[in-house]
Image (cartoon, rainbow, N blue to C red; front, side, top):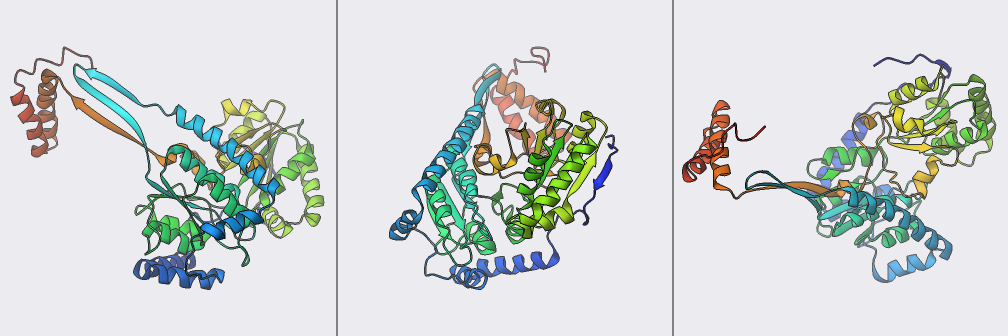
Length: 439
């Protein structure tokens, strides 16, 4: 692959973060998981008290408590949640319909088929931290329900000691079967391992901090996961037609996710790039979330100027960013010329924040270059595509029996060979030969 040359107007002050957790995070997660594995609910309650200052007899939200939470959520918020979830549902349903099942006959009486079967149970982690991220409820719970998952367990932590009412409402309206006010390592471990009161699930999805990500990494295999998500990333491709103010606002909108969130600009026009930098410097001091955004832009922000739009697309592909926004004269060119991104946002009328919050596509996306080999969370993640086989023609079975015997003996698998032999003998004749069919 040719490396695109660029003029760097702003380089990140920090080097690329490690793709693995720090030793301290790994050690802490290992210890907590082992303790929960040994002591179950008792350990979960202790860690919830330690990390979130919350240790009720039951973390499950139901009955009167659930209704009280729903009653506290403003009517307009409920309406907005329902509208956004309808958008997510439409996208997930379209995805599900695109996943075909089939059965074909490859030889006389040889039937090969494929079925899509939903996973039985799923865990949805909806992060809290400094801000309630209720949109994650739509993305993880609702998508699983559209896929046909019978049991969806949802966990979210308290935020500064308060129940995140809107998040719980979103979880309930998305169709969660069990809602727990529980966060961090203890939530992931409880869903993966199971406790006296929380049955384990088959897959866990949803973003979280470094401890949540590390818990998912360590438990992967014992439980399925969506992906290992790092800090939010955004990249904008600009040209001479780009509105510098809009580009600046959009870069900062993603930088506010956290102090380690990269925001990258690639422009074919130096003057536009410089104006975007000026706007960012003007906007940051007054930004309510500058505690995160300012540090993210300082430490991880990048600005590159390239000679052509082709170079811009090529350089953007090298980043393989989670979010790529195309603010150019012909944004749909990126659909043909780019291939490495978590999600693409085309044109000035579209922004990454729409994808994060309201438009309907899933916001759980690959980071740290993972877009080179995987997409984000979608309805197919909750569905197992499985195959089946049936041979009803005796001549076909005899033919495959002889073929299997020869193929298995080349690999010295005598038992496999004999499974073929007995069918070749039972259905003697092997009427089919290599010349009967084209392989």
